[in-house]
Image 1 (cartoon, rainbow, N blue to C red):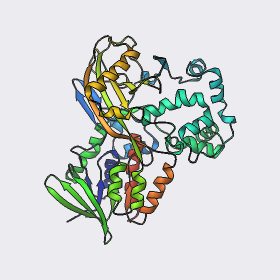
Image 2 (cartoon, rainbow, N blue to C red):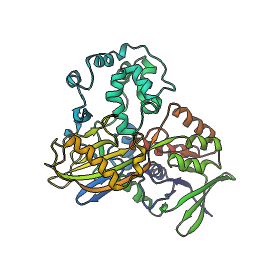
Image 3 (cartoon, rainbow, N blue to C red):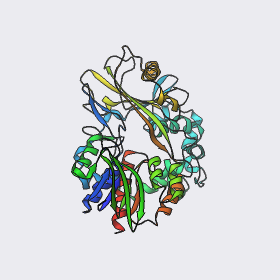
Image 4 (cartoon, rainbow, N blue to C red):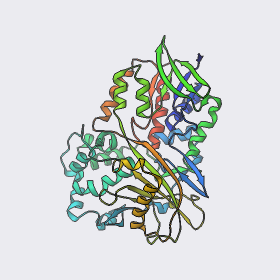
Length: 450
């Protein structure tokens, strides 16, 4: 049995952020990772001259992530998307329609009728209510109207959550909008009041790593050295005599590590299994958090090989406009250096809650369905070159109507265990930056309890 100062279970972005924060505060942490590589779903790879993201493609730099990046020296690695990527599209009637990004564009957009636009603009005058327990669909309908819900908000959720607006909870998905309504009785009035109050702001735009998102996780993993133990799966946790005993399965056999501090930075399912021995109710709560599968397919096409020009961020596919494809990112138009000269890198996202069975289709079946849908929109003049197919059976957590109370209840039950903290994208936000921030918060929590 080996005693260490702190154990972090999981080496995704949440676990790596926790380990980096602990290290910066003088606490040496051992990081256990079941897989053969660190970084979790952040996975960048050079393939045939293209920089392919097999997991998340972009992120926002919110204040918490910005502060962390400055503290950890990651700021030079951040890369802002090209200005032209601000143009975004939705599929409507089999054609690309620009998402309105300004007042003039909003007035002219065919995505909403005149009545739908007026209803959306009337939001400040709609009586406020309490969004507790509401789905995103219910909240969006009440505040913005059914047209805006279907034409704008539901496709956004497809891109971020691969989910269903009728199942996702408003408080978890749109916490700032719900909070704005609670403060001011209106989302618009609440957001304006917040803007006038000032405070930390997110960096404008969309971001990635200069050498892919993995360059950030690699930078956090490198200083750990031997403290990062790959292919070491935590199989059981117990709390005995004021310390946590973690059983580990490795290629060389079973081992045990003991520590007085523990950060559990795993997805909901494995976290639930490990917590069962500590608190069955907390484990059950985390185990109830569902997830959506996503398949990511990277294609290379010649720059002149599409009837519709490849430009801007890419496009999302609303319900009813496609069967399997959720969206297509124009990755080579987002960031420089993602494809060789004369080529375009397209990243297709498929399955999700819309077609979960597609995650188990054969490569040939999946490609045939996706290429047919892409061809119908972009008009392919030649067969694309397939660079990679990556399947994530549990890609994105699906926070439901009572998610905040569910997570709060689990944390409350675990509070009787000293210096134990949870981190991960299933807790307080599914985005890359939110998962990072959760890891840093968990590390500060266990340090403050010393």
